[in-house]
Structures are given as structure tokens and as C-alpha cells.
Image 1: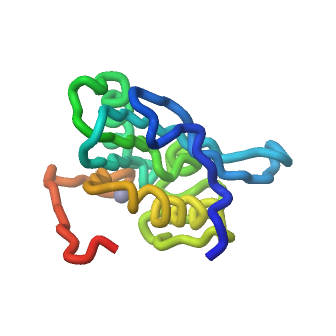
Image 2: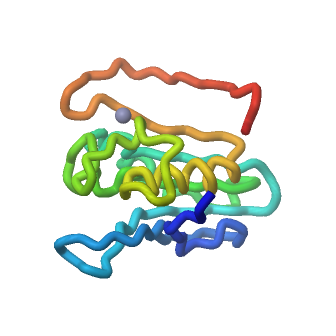
Length: 165
Ligand SMILES: [Zn+2]
């Protein structure tokens, strides 16, 4: 399959704390040579499992992004063994617009998997998660809430996959 056009400004193998971006090339009305820059934080301390923490899969669900951006400031390498990858707003165009779906392509991130490397911005992002970030991860926590149209009773749902692939 074609390589992802999305690149990361962080090194997933580097020790310590890095704040950077996932960069997806995007030529739009505001910039012919523009990019969608999705914030990412990687915190690593030695060997151990990897946790991938995501929010803003739907851009109008603010609870996850608020909690995860707070965690990017408060979590320090010395308090973990292994690696934590934090992406507070997966669908960053949707998050910036305060919308459930992408302001660029209308994409619903949660319905875009496994994604496409030559697809829309939402599909390109989903493909990067599917082929790059998920294989790095032992645990994935994707935080949702009700957004503009629902009220959720607080709960957690977990899936243990028999076949990691
Ligand atoms: Zn959601």
C-alpha cells in the first residue's frame, strides 16, 4: 500500500517529553502549500508498554481534549515506565471549527477507519492512526462525550482484542 503522506515532527523512540505535530499536506483556500497540523505529545521513559490516548475524534466533544491537553502538561517521564502518546484532538479541523465532523472534508473520523493514504484529510489521518500509531500501541484510550447533540452518563467501555492485528 502507498506510504502515508502524513509525517510526524516527533520521534517516537526518543526519551523524554516532546510536543509536536502530525503534518498532513493540504492545499486549500488559506494556503496553496498548507498543511493540517495536529498536535501530538510523546512522553517516554525506558522500556515498557505504550499507551495511545486520543480525544477530539469528534470535534465538538471538548472533555477529552481538555483532559488530555492538561495531561500533556502534568505527566512527566519519571512517573511512567514506557511510552504515552497523546493526541488531544484527532480530528483537528473539526475541533478547531467546534464541529462533530471535519470542516475540510466533512469526514466523521470515527467512521473513517481504516482510512486511505490517498484519500481525504480525514481518511489520511485515519490511515496514519491505523498503520503507524496503533501498531506502536499496547493500550488505546479514545475519549468521547456527547458533543452538541447528546448528554452522556459517565461510563467506560473497553475491548480486549483477541487478535491485535
Ligand atoms: Zn465521539
